Image (cartoon, rainbow, N blue to C red; front, side):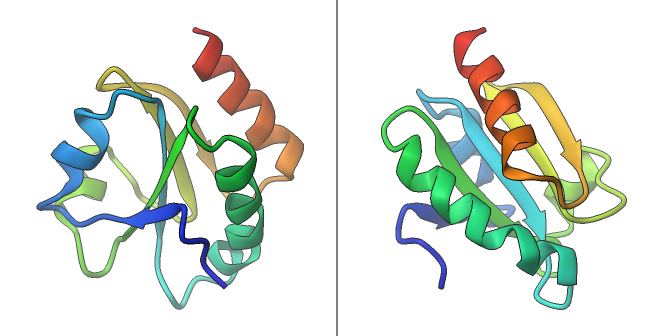
Length: 111
């Protein structure tokens, strides 16, 4: 089900994959047991295809990688961050409609 355009990152690979990325990155903080996380997964797969080359989408499992969520103050999931040039540009908490994500991504890419 997961798109091959979505990268799974860890606490160890986060800096290289996200903070040093030359394109904006949408990070999905998730866990396998999280129903809303599973609900938005198909939307993220769609976005990965639609924004190919302009946006990188990564997922980080909060259970297996506690340092990164703690660093960004993630208290609930799904929690989506958009990072551009190493800085948080947008935060979206909870399962939201695709249009909400598209507006946030378009805004971050244009900024």
